[in-house]
Image (cartoon, rainbow, N blue to C red; front, side, top):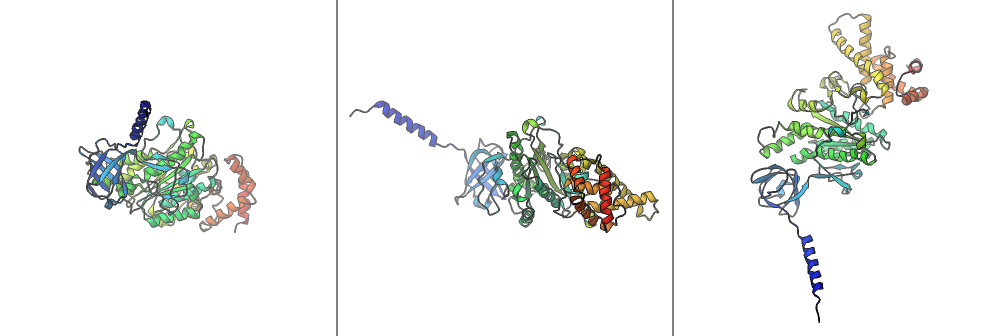
Length: 515
């Protein structure tokens, strides 16, 4: 029997090719020290900063970690799993991958941890793609000015502290002053846009919150029909510090997937991300810094908390039309201690953002809800993020309130006021009453314009302060019924120009029937 040499050669060649494809080369190290959510690893000479590591535990369950410190002989890693499973001497494998999270439409309506693992008891998430968690923000050339309004549905915000799509607006105040409630109102108000070209995907990132609080938020969103376009990313107070540290970046990465969809001509391309709250993220980062023994220089706490928050908030943007015109709006929340806005972290975030909504405990205690101090609160985008009708009525509103505050302080001294000053004081009191609003009941922007128009033009001056809310409710019902044609004209034109007489007549007609 004659053996063909070329056949043997082809078989050997095939064996060698198969052997090469089955061979896996990976860099391996050993755990030197472990505890409190961090591990020190020896032997990973070529590992990258921010690379994912895989810890092979004796129980057989793999735990992932993130490279944070590159030292002379060892690598400092933050752990995303149970630290108790890892022992000294365990094998650690470098994956060659930078930290990523699953992204896509499949995430909508779900409650996930910062690694994209479902926490809501639903089926496992099979996302179509993934995005890197920590990236460099888009450059100046990739952006355009913020000019589209993002409606909160809160009269005080939409009229005097307008927020545009792509803006970064800080929500700041002491604990229990309604910071989360303001942001939830904004999320619920996006319901009317869902299914339209203006649809906004909302992401609520909870850092260091109690699990019961997060469950309450999810229940509120579900009850108001907002969960279908919302992703909740939760790193609760019981979660390890590394998960609390990466949670805001994970939420941002999930949002960026939608923001860039505009470039492919897909919708939705507008995103709103609420970071609740960044004070707790800074605390988690500080814990990591201390455990990893980072030197107390610029690269450690507190010096790089500015970098921690700026590299997150710089990712909020309104993309240029060449990039699809998508947007990512950020609402970071910062908790102050006893109203101290001049502390280190509050001043950091104030300098990074495009304005702030300041919630005052004194106003909250006085029954003004939402407790927004419109004197200190500001938006650096301003009228660019308002419809024309709102711009026409809101200018006088801010002036009326400012004059009212000055006169109120003066009147408390028991001074006799002249008729004009008394009139201003009365109007201001009604304005303050008008701006009060129930929780989770956002107003349509046209309704807000009508209410403020009626108050600023003096139609409410003779309405008792206690009846302002009832007057407003009846007035808006009147514009949904007998005067609907006038309201429709305003909704179409988005300006009061040429409609003053019709609005005046319609408000007078309602006033004649109001008891």
